Length: 281
Image (cartoon, rainbow, N blue to C red; front, side, top):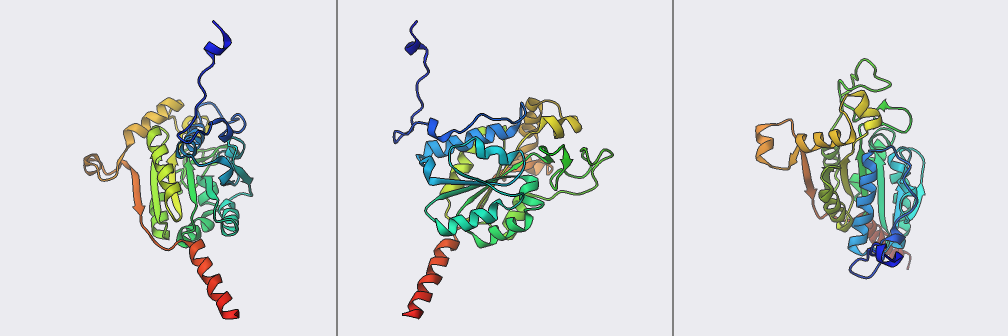
């Protein structure tokens, strides 16, 4: 059989773009890490929409999730811990035509970056924040994060964590985000759909994706392998408003919590500049 016959077909989207320009270097994440699946879904979402990679600007902070900078071939800025949204805001204001996306970990987004997160929500600037929630500080040794939850084990909580967690979706809604959604790495089709919806939304979008960390959170909390952790996502979540949630209030809901049209920050900023220029005339 010839080499040509064994070569898989090139993946080309509806407007003729090849998927290869969207992809960067090979992943260096742990085997079974949910962040790999999220990265792949992110690439697929932009590819399927026909959004050229050179029109995307991606910002990340510090952590396992933030290593995504090297795995995609977009304009990328690997910033300091917890400050990705601040950098992204500056670039979006100066280059509003760019599709701005900010993948973050639960600690990066909601511990040191928590203040930036809530104010990005209230400003409603047109960009998409993807919170990759693995409930642990994986890159620095398995310390507990704000999302680890009461009673969980971590390297910094060998006798059980006494800090309570909070709900990312509820926090984003309360802070004023105009698009808020949640899914898991088990529900791969939902990841594509929700990322696509978030990118198309004209305003600040938050997509929480529950992501397994078998190396630290899974091992410390005896949740098993990556596949077993994903099975937990299957069994312990349900779609918003389902009968299952009525029967079992402990189930975590997935889907779109908020989608509303309110004035977008860059557009409002342009109006301020226009008014100021008229005043100087």
